[in-house]
Image (cartoon, rainbow, N blue to C red; front, side, top):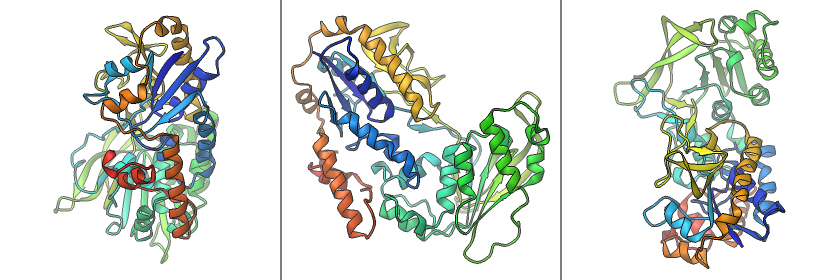
Length: 458
């Protein structure tokens, strides 16, 4: 029997486990999927916006894999501490595949970024998605009237949409009750989503972009003068990927269509801004954000932008940066600080340039934060292929007869699949008590209690 640990239960981890047990070249492979959280599915549970039901339905596919009798989910197991590092895992398993994602957001690197009210979009997504590490946050929504989102990807569009969307529209989702209540009491009426380049360089999908125009009681504004700076806007025949061209056309339809004056009572506005580079977060004099100073940029003719020396201040009491993610080092594993990934060859972890016996990577920690959920399939397949090619040598190495006992001896309190089912049942009951559908439990004690563990076992 070949025993494999997969660290991370998001799409890359689940697809890796699926490939390992469904192949036919190596018989009798058993996989334990370990996760720091007591809940599976990774960013599908804690990164997909609650109003994106179709994408969230992917949990059903991941669930089918984790219910395979050859795969065992073990949540609430944190890898990387002094008692459960890579060396210890290799005493318990013949091979370990690390699928730990990219947990850190990139910073803007400008003065004022540490003022109160400046946060990462990652933290905001975790909060409204009920990640237990974000419990107790509220983002000062009750005191803010305007917000700035810096970035031009799907995450920036998501947080912009959630800020502008009415709480009544979000009530049918599984959004945690504290976040729903905070959004219901939000004073934010103006949301500016700002990009340093033009619309043809946006990383958002057309579907996500169009959703902004369909929000009840929300006006979307685009400055025609900013669009006109984009070469692809000025020249419809310019070569451009299809999705980027569609994005430009959507924005063209909004340009100048909505009034820029005072908002009618009860309405909100999303302003999509382009060719503005953040240079400073402005202080209100009391240590909180008052706005963002941007420098006007123009195309440099080489696909980038250059500053013009002209500046514009955009008022805001909340600033969310959404300019990308970075992998974080896992103690005991090699790490490339330049790419923020683990060095590897076809998924085999490299230590000093040499493949490390029994250690593999897949997902964002392998390739960087790129692609969509489906991109994890070929990535996982490549890594699983490398592992299976090494299987005969790996299986010859002695390991612990009972890896779960080894995890417990290292101080872990594993939550098995049955414990996750207990969390699901508790969330369904919580939703029923609130007159909603299933509602996520947003805190560690609540999750662990529902899973059948004492709250201190986190």
